[in-house]
Image (cartoon, rainbow, N blue to C red):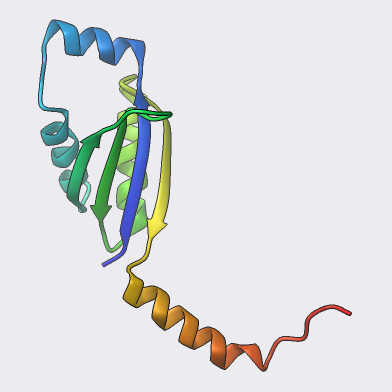
Amino acid sequence: MPRFIITGNYTQAAAKGMLAHPSDRGAATGALIEAAGGTMEAFYATTGPTDFIIIATTDDVTDIIASLIVAGASGAASNLQTQRAFTSEELLAMQKKAVDLAAAYSPPG
């Protein structure tokens, strides 16, 4: 099943809400992803350029995008980014396919 890495930042409104009413943001995020048809594998609060990272799986990327639209529209998250992640086994299969495709390609020059 395709895996996605999602990163983002909390907004000022989210920080105020977390101060006023501390809550399990992983549980809230997991419920949203599951409601859209995906599965959250992990949720981490992070340091650095983003405030959180989510690892989620779904058969349809539109499930993840729909979840991000809801989170962004709520005003709680910003700078949401999604990347498709591949296992080492999937990468190996891509390499093998590339070997087969190499003969069909002519580089410029």
